[in-house]
Length: 262
Image (cartoon, rainbow, N blue to C red; front, side, top):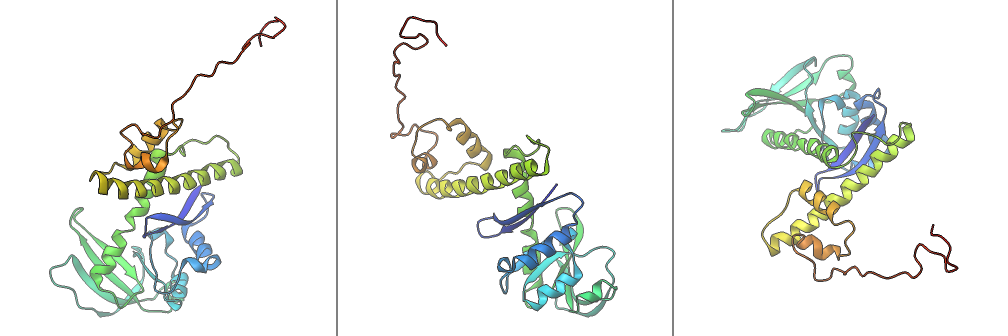
């Protein structure tokens, strides 16, 4: 199974997700998402995607709708350089070029694209990016692609904190149900953490990690507390916590007539 997710950078929460079988190509899933849900891609929005989602014909359609993208250029891409653009001084930008795709599939795009080469100091390598935006600076485009790593962190959260590595059922419906439940849970947990961080930063100047919050929630599942108060200070007993009271039940385990218990 594959999960294809559109993560909104504002809040880093998924706004759309679809589950397909493992044989479905990533670009096909993205094409379906783009055509069936145009409301997810308003004018002048940006989409940072992995190289597996490259679809040259779809890139042309995105350009027609003023939807900007940034992705990695495939190593086997065939193109012709039109001209060089100015490189910003004292930056990690190696080159900035406008190109025309010349392969049979590349010509389906129909628009000039932008090839930005960035030097990755940490890994000592060049990263070649592809975009259809001609107005933004090369450094800005590189910074936008760097934010694509947030989707990897999101899936890491899902795998580490929710039971998605093994499945209760093996049918397609059972697997999809468990995956969608996990996605719903991760959205709620991220919302709770955002609320908790905003309150705790003001009150204590501290925040805890996502995994710590999940553990604390599991421990407190059977406590009667006000959630808003608990999220602000989960390490102290809540003044509103209800105390458990033992209620005697007469004749427990014995019939009134004197017979045996259950």
